[in-house]
Image (tube, rainbow, N blue to C red; front, side, top):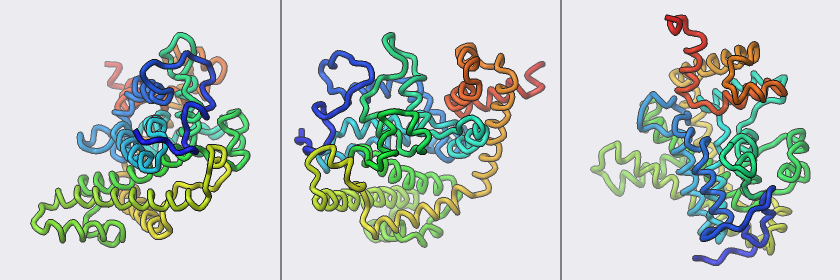
Length: 374
């Protein structure tokens, strides 16, 4: 195994767990974190949560689960090249979407609108809430009792108000400090994964075309190279080859630029990393290319009328469920009713955020559809 860089996260410089536990046997603390995440109920539910397309629209489209696995693979590759802690990068990647609502970003926006007067809703914060509180698997503690560095990496964004309430894990947002390089890697691996698989899923769905994508420099370059190398390749395989090359180009650029940034700032310790600017980054040219791709997807895929139709339905389902549970908490499952006595809105948000797409659709039908009475 490659020796870790001195500024990588390791057992000796980790801030450990909130509740002390005996050291694991046969695995590291961060392997234990990864294993706890994989065995959690929230992780299993990601199989039936939307990425862009609602789960039942097709068996081959990405879900939050397949997305998280792809993020973890990319993050491990980058971390290995940079001599960082692969297990930590993997754990953060697998956990980063545990708090996501059903119906993707439309669901999050709807739930945040519902929670406007109650502290709002943000899926990164919810992911941390899941691993800190909501998972109930262990006798000695609520949540998963993950290491500080894993929890820190899950929390990619945070307002000052929320950071002040989170204690140690929120301090960096108040002090303008960075998380570990492993967390920075997982963050950009997330971006690489969703941009590229959304291209793949968008083409598979027919909502965007290769002809449209030829206007995007990152895609055009890799598409041209794929066609030149394999002129007789069927279009379906051309798409796969192009996406594969796009991921490779982004990862290679990220590693090279990050190595240059690390050399320039010469961090000697993990504290040096936290004090430095973000060191995991693309080159200026590649950053502009991936921004152009993101903008293309926002306009041509995420705002496509077929996607917007489903998003509208999703917002209606989330809004209806939130309203009815707030009006009468007795309709909540028993485990959420006791929580609702102290903070009804947050209990309702926890329940809704934990739903899969199909469960939310069924719950809405059970409560609102007249034919359910027959």
